[in-house]
Amino acid sequence: MEDTNRRINGHTRTCGLIANPVEHTLSPVIHNTLAQIQGENLVYVPFRVSEELLGEAVKGAYALNLLGVNVSVPYKSAVIPFLQEVDSLAGNIGAVNTLVRMEGGYKGYNTDMPGLFRAMTEDGVRIEDEKVLVLGAGGVARAVAMLLASKGARQVYLLNRTLERAQEIAAEINGMEKRELVQAMALSDYRRLPEEQYLAIQTTSVGMHPHVNQAVLEDVEFYKKIHTGYDLVMNPAHTRFMQLVEAQGGRAFNGLKMLLYQGIIAYELWTEETVDEALAAQIYAQLQEAVR
Ligand code: ATR
Picture 1 (cartoon, rainbow, N blue to C red):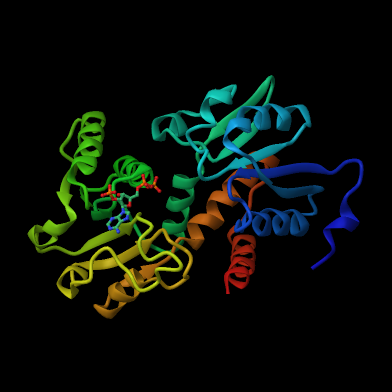
Picture 2 (cartoon, rainbow, N blue to C red):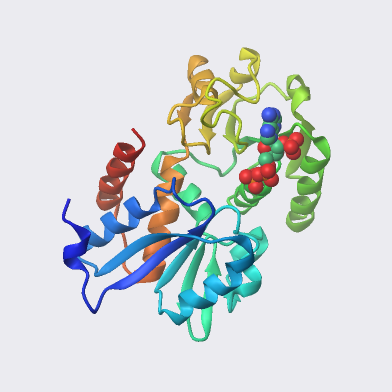
C-alpha cells in the first residue's frame, strides 16, 4: 500500500473517529483505503476523547475544519447535544455514528442501521415479510427492531435475559408502527417460539473476544428454527452463535459487513461520491485481512 504520508499536502482533508477506547478500531482501514483507491486527498485518524471533553472535541473538530467525524462507543447518544442538526433516522434511533460538516456545526447521522441493511441486501438476506428473532434488548437491538419495522418484517420476537427491557422496546415500536409487530419474550422462554423458520439477529456482546466459547443460547432445538443468523459481533470472525446456526443447516454472517457498509455510507456522505460493489468488495478484503 502507498505510504499515506506521501499524499498529505496543503489540500488534504481530515476525517476521524471519536471514541474511547479507540485503539482497536478498523475504521481507518476502511476510509484510508477508500480514499487511496478513489484518489481522494483525505486522511482518517483515530481520536481518543475522554467523556468530559466530548463537547469540546466536537467543537474543536469543527474549528479545525475536519470534513467528517465518526463517533463510536460510548458516545453515540452523548454526542447528540453537541450537534447543529440530527437526521431523522438518527433521531429516532437515538444514536449518531457519523458527523457531516454543515454551516455552523455538524449534522449527525446513523449509518449503522443503513449499513446493516446494505450488508444484508448484499448477502441476499431479506427482511420484508420475514419472521425475525432479535437476541438482546439494548440500544443496538432497539435500532435493529426499528430497521425491521421500517423494512416490512412480518413478525419480530425480541428475546432478552431481562424481559422488561424487551417489553419497553416492543411497546415503543408497536406504538410507532400501530401494529403488534414486536413481541417481547424472556430468553429462557425460547421453547415457546412458534414452529417456524426465522431470520435471527444477535445483538448482545455474548461470544465476543475473549469469551469466544459463549452464546446466548446453546440448545440445538432453538437453532433448528433459524434459517439465517446474523451476529453483530465481529471478533472473533466466526462466533459460537454462528457455529450453532451453521451446525443446524442455517446460513450465518458476522458483523464485519455491517461495519464495512456503515463506513462506506459515512464516506459517501462526506465525499458525495458513490462506492460501487466492486470497490466495496476490495475494502472488505482489506478488512478481512485486518481482522485475521
Ligand atoms: P448495546 O447498546 O450495545 O445494545 P446494552 O444496552 O448494554 O448494549 O445491551 C446489552 C444487551 O446484551 C442486553 O440485551 C443484555 O441483556 P440484559 O438486558 O438482560 O442485561 C444482553 N446481554 C449482555 N450479557 C448477556 C448475557 N451474558 N446473557 C444474555 N444477555 C446478555
